[in-house]
Image 1: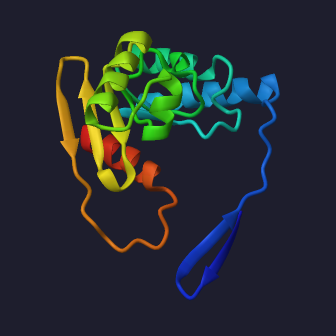
Image 2 (image 1 turned 90 degrees about the horizontal axis):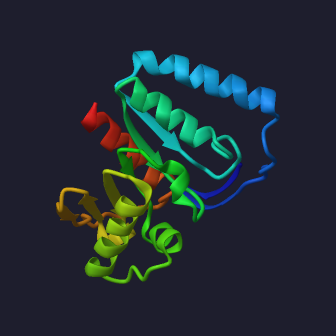
Image 3 (image 1 turned 180 degrees about the vertical axis):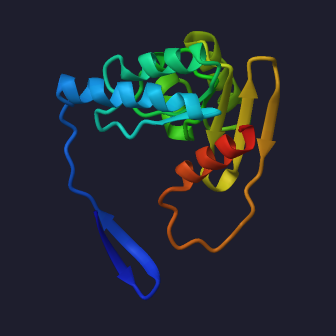
Length: 175
């Protein structure tokens, strides 16, 4: 990653990376290490960057292992196939990801809630927390609960990592 700065403000970031699938033996080592580490965790967070680590059956294997161990699973998803996160307790897509995954409009609160409920039904997810950039967040649970949390305006120079911050705060709160 190369960050281009002006004073203390990041103007741009350029990334060079690969999305090649992991070799099977590397994937197996990562899964084994993750499952072993679950013994010392209250929460399991799968932050899918779409770079191959959680590709194939990896996400499903980790979710099943975590649920079997009695752990809460939070997934920050990528791509349009959220079925592979079936069984997670909480899914945290942003507005665009929610629309792409459900192929539903997500322009307003009612549409966001409807799309989130579709994910809950179709993917066996308990709760969907949709991040809405400057519009805050909407939390939809399978038990008919809907909570809208507004954003507080701040002068922010770099929003990189905002989704990771939401997932981290949620995991800490639930733990």
